[in-house]
Image (cartoon, rainbow, N blue to C red; front, top):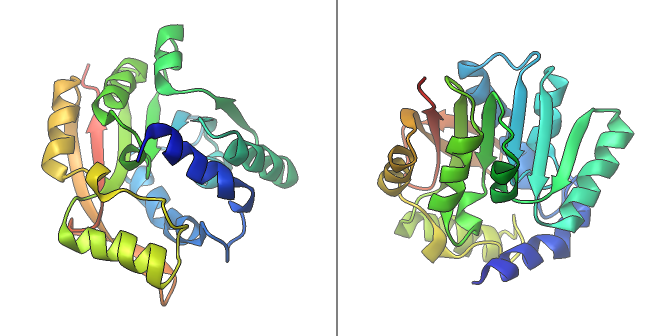
Length: 229
């Protein structure tokens, strides 16, 4: 899969981002768990948050409703259209931009905290994104990552089951070769000058449409990093 192919996949289905029974329903079902983890570390009220790879704004809106000042960025115009339209309907204040982390880093902007959820497994050079995040993050700020481990179990769960058997996500959403092990991600984090603060698994239960934090890192997992002053 090329970078452009990854973006095209989201462009194709972006209009349906807020259909909770549609191709991105899994994001809606795991979002409470993502928000719960973030709030373990930071008080979102008044916090300046950058959401990298924001998609249709599912997490961006949730954080804004908790009182955060959120900027969401993505490269897909289709998903950003869906994000802006839904934010307007809900009267939620989120700033959306079509750009990447490198552009923001060149602009010299910084944020208190940064989220990068379900995004790194869709980019050619995740280490470069993490270096940008280190530059964009204010001292003592936290960066929250979620991605997919590169295991046989993740291939069966995220591609065979989710894309082909249950169609929880559109076909072609994932490339197993782009999945990242926790050790690889931790190494990228440390090389960027950040400190790993927490590592959590996430168990997703499609039948009951919910997820919870766990110690199981075999498929989905979160990594929390901090920029120590």
